[in-house]
Length: 149
Image (tube, rainbow, N blue to C red; front, side):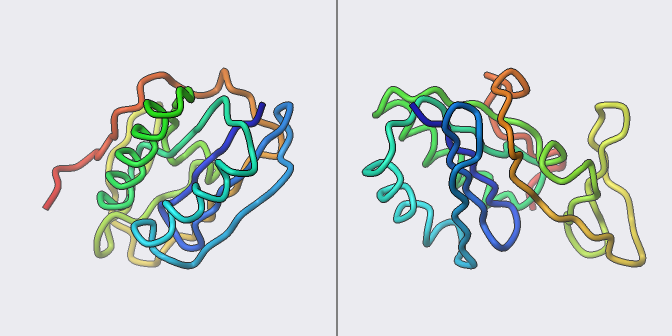
């Protein structure tokens, strides 16, 4: 059985395939989530027997979060795969995440807020080499952190 981690809040989209909690394959795409997620999962579902899917539930691009949630929740229901989530800070070493303009999401003491940065901070998402499923939540509803525009 395999697990999949989907990091789709920035470019490139990263998808990690895990076997026995170890990263065995990384898939990258520069395309938009809405254009490529279905195609990537069509291939993944043909090659691997999935037990778990983990995705970023926020904060970040509202559209990317919505698309990932709806698509992955549907796959979870139809295929009987467990769906888990984590906030984006888990995958970027707790770095600020672009919101809009000079506004960035930050996480301090488990609270997600926004902060203005004059210089754009760097934020790189990475897949864990070893996956600990206990780090992820059954609370999979998207977290937008600020009202949608």
